[in-house]
Structures are given as structure tokens and as C-alpha cells.
Length: 231
Figure 1 (tube, one colour):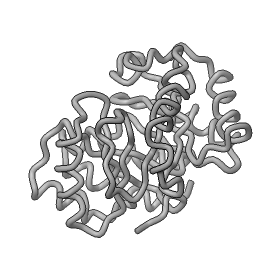
Figure 2 (figure 1 turned 180 degrees about the horizontal axis):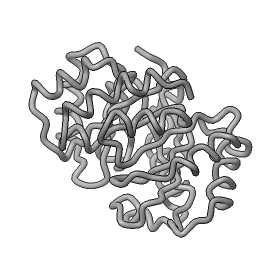
Figure 3 (figure 1 turned 135 degrees about the horizontal axis):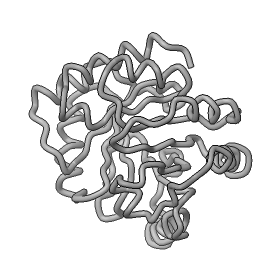
């Protein structure tokens, strides 16, 4: 298992999307540092369990990004907990977490839990709409969230989430400059090795998701492209 502080490249698989066994094998054997299972809608326990069982046939680190409590199941190496810092509804920053801990607090293995300070920046993305994220942010707004994640909350990750579109490389570079302990994750719109390399120059971790389902051959090339970069 590759520990989270060693991650550079990860693939994200959506339980609500179909992927055949051959494609899944290519993803899991690509050399990626981890596979994250997660999505915004249509994520059920049955779909999550099915995907987990299929990924577990391969020796790759597997993490669940928790979007709904009903789909949480044992068997993952890590459980990534998004805290949407720019949501206008406090339940997406702490309320949902409080609800979960009230019910399952005594059963949680806290060593497996990793909190991601999310900053959602694509207003058209499902995650932005679901979490009522305020995406009309200035650079100073984003940097302030990054500093909060790093210095006040001491989150393991700060996640710049563009979900479906390429974000600003300049902003990623500026965020990287203010983080000292928290790892910077970039996700959104990466479809080619060149795009992956460009963001890997500044982000600690690059996430590739939709490209798996749209152009797998190009998605697989992103692994080496990211590794060739030193953020």
C-alpha cells in the first residue's frame, strides 16, 4: 500500500459509471499511486461494494471518498472526507460529519480517515450545485481557504476541484506557495499527459477521473507524465 503522503497521481472511479474488466485492469495496473472510489450522485452501497471487490483483485491502494453515509463500507485503505470550505451551507463543512460521528463514532478507525479541505470552483459541476458552493471567488479568497486548511485546521489535503473543466494553473501555483504542511490536490478536466504534467508541476497530487471513461489510452499516459514532474 502506498501511503497518502507519497501520492502524486491518482485515478478516481465513479461507482455510478460503467467500466469493463479489461479497462479496470489497465487502470489498476497503470502504476498510479492510488485509486479513489467516489462520485456525486447515484453512489449506492451495492455499487460501491461491487467496485471495491473488483479493484481489490489488484495490489493498488484504494480509498473511498465519502459522499453519502449509506455507501460507507469496510475494506478500503483510506476514507477521504470532503469538507467543502466554500459551501454556503455549514452541513457540507461539518454538519454531515457530525451526523456520521453521532451514529458511528465508536466504530471509526481514525487512522484511516483523511479530511480534504475542498474548494469547488466550477459553478456548473454537480458537486458545486449539490453543496451550494460559492464559486465566485477571488484569488485572495482561495488563498485564504488554503491557509485555513493548512494553518488552522491542519487538514492532510487541500483540494482545488474544478470537476469537468481545466482550472487555472496560475491559481494552483499560487496556492502551492502558501501551503507548508497540507498537500495540494488538483482535480478537473485533465484528459492528456501534457495537461497532467502541467498541473503536476505545482500540485502535490493530480486526480484523473472522467478521462478514464472518455479516452482511456490518454488517461493511462498521465501516470508517467505526472511522475516525470517534481512539484
